[in-house]
Image (cartoon, rainbow, N blue to C red; front, top):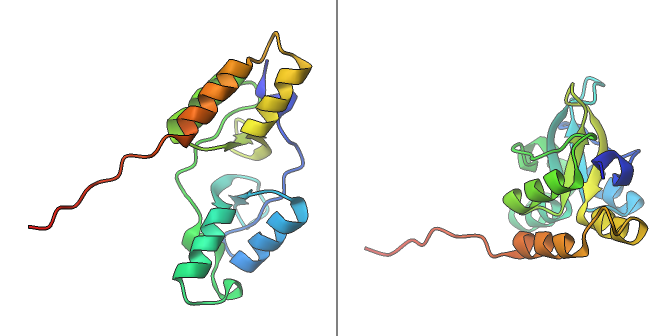
Length: 156
């Protein structure tokens, strides 16, 4: 099964110049935990993503109002994405490797055309169990949830 069959279309986006307050509003209104960040000149080219966790951590650590913090300051610029023509298996492997629950879906020009979440894939197991494996979804969730290795700093 291809990503384009199960991805969410009509994804809300923001620009790097917008504030975290605006990004949080989009998340609240669209009931989502991630917003792709695209070039502010109107083209849909993916530059990064901002997540609900990014907003929460900025609120905690910055000592400024969300309306004073531009998305560009906290957005993740290293983004793993997939293509609409990719298989679900390919997307799951990308999620596992990057330990993320959601992938922006981009076309050949790098424009955002959708979003694929692990929840989208899980729902697909009900529609097409012969094409999307529940055990693969479980394995992907387990890999995403694996604790990340942290560098241990020892006092000298």
